Each structure stands twice: as C-alpha cells, then as structure tokens.
Image (cartoon, rainbow, N blue to C red):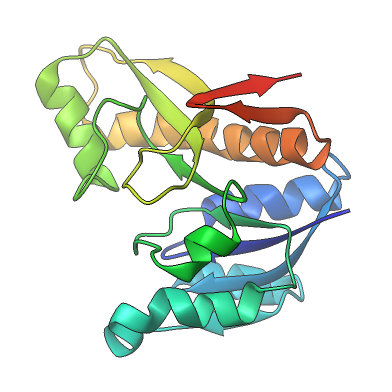
Length: 201
C-alpha cells in the first residue's frame, strides 16, 4: 500500500477528496500525515479522520521549512502530495524524494503558472487573457516552480459569463478527480518518466 504525506495551506478540499477515495476503497494508499505551513481548515479535516497532523508555520521556520518537513516524512512515506500547498519546497527534500513529489496546479501548465501564480490569481489571469479552455495539471515537483514533468491534465471550458471565481469552482471539481487519479496511477506502478514525458501504462 502506498504511503503518502499530504501538504496543505488552506481549506483542504483536495485533501478531502483523497480521504474520501481512500475510505471508499477507490485507491490503495494511506495518509500517514498531513502537514500545513499555516493555520488552515484542512488540519481539522485531517484530525476528524484520525490522521496525524503537523503545523509548521512558514513565518517561523522560513528557510528551514523544507528541512523540517523532510525530518517528518523521511523513511516514512513513499509519496508527497502537494494539495494546495503554497510554500516552495527546496533543498534536500527534492533530492531524497526525486520523482516522488506531486503537485496539483489550477491551470493547464505551461500556461498561467510559475512564481506568484497561485489561487485565484491563476483564474484571473486566464479570464484576462481570454482563453477558451482552462483546467488543472498534476505534475512531478522539481527544482523549478510548476516546471516538473506533467502526469495528467483535465480541461474545462471558459465561458463568456465566467469570472475568476466561477472558473475556479469548475476547475476545483476537476482537481478533486485529477489528484485522486494521479495517486491511483502511481500506486499501481503505471507511471514512468522519460525525460520530460510521463508515460502512463
């Protein structure tokens, strides 16, 4: 069974989708811990389901935050899942967990991603640009920001009457499915990385 750690920064709706999928036996994995870099409702979601939680305030740990996370997860989990986690992982954790950290981003990478592109800002940019299609991307995490190999993407239409919030909600529905699907594929050993390409068997 795949052992995962879930990192969050907010409400934890993607975390909840993973919890639900595990409890409904849709995926074969266990959440060993949930780590948040700030006070967040997602911590309460985890505690409600008996999952061990850690609050590592980014304002306190600053440049050592990634190292503190590594101390918790090293030799304990197989995969780290960034589910609305807003701090940037760096240093040894990226080496120790190379190709074992995944993130979900609320756009079709490489559009509307990178530094300072998170949350509602992503959808505001998509609306402003006038794209007809947006969506979400699950990708492996590397040393860059939203630059790792893409595992899967889900699309939604962008309609003339959309604003950033309506688009965000429609994409969030797809995020909930995509993150679960990605974990499922990895747990079954169906994901292989060849350069920048991710092959799904």
